[in-house]
Length: 498
Image (cartoon, rainbow, N blue to C red; front, side, top):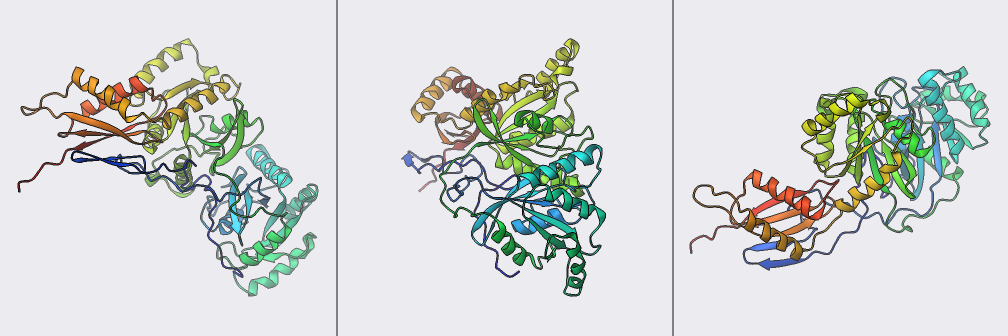
């Protein structure tokens, strides 16, 4: 590459590890008898470390680069090369990418958004037509278009049809001759001049050959980019849409966005890469991320499904609240249970959206209530919303549910109020006697938020059942609906003999 790649410090997109963009709180340490009371910056509850701030994000919208071309010419591989990491799902079969997926990219200290698209084909039908439409929308909304062509086979009729489509957009087009792995293959690139787009740029997206020169050309064609590091902290709250295949995640995203943002098909597994969209719901802008349906455990999946599962897991980690979609017209399955367990263990706020409510009759409602009592008893605190993405029924109720979950996810209980309540609780219901004595709960502190994390300082180890009892009473007293809470027990260290 002609220029050494600079490390990107931008905010992570779906599949990255960035979480909520909130500042860290100052550390406070007090010594009380044999204990150290720790504030939110200490990991006493076993939570993940809080991410770095997003202060270096650019101000205003970024220029957009759309990567288009016929199927299996290496568009997603080129996107990964531009990003400098394996973000887009890649497999050596056509049709892996279906939606238009946006990623933040950086080159030579300048930022832009690169949009990966599915394969564009003329006269496409059914799902292929929806994929082609998404590619056309990406090209129409971009500032610059990269048309990727397989240099090994030359210009085909499909490539010439793509050129005609792109000329109608009146956008600058850079012709990329991909799969040029050595100098000898560069001789074959000359035939691509016939497409009428000017000089073809030979690259090997797989090996990186020529990609630096291509990026330099791309930056010259882009409008002026804002400098790195002039944006305030903040941004829309991140919401991940997850669930097993074919429960209506993409349909819900399209309903909320009021446009065909994601490809929808009756065949399960249509979405592969996470698709993010800024959506206004309830008078507030949210960043919704549509994810691939979780069909198997990540360690047993293979090929595209394996990488799609990894991207979905990354989208959950990057989110602040997760909407888990369940098909209300069908029995709650083992796959649904696996998804719920994965989301609950991630520590994110949860909203359960029972979709396809327009297909639920009275008999199904009766059995659904019984299933919820039996199958969802592990997360009775999750907020429930009954919706229909197809008809739009009650989708406006998502915004209040999301706000409630986020508010409780970030809730902090004052230490004095917490211990006053805890003292009354343990006096009314002390720990059961085990082995002739009962451990006592001395005091408690909230170790952090997002999700709320508490530490109980005791004279001995507590029974798991008693810890669950304290958690249930804590929820009843301080209202932690929609968020998991973590309670850690720290027994007092025994004094050794001198």
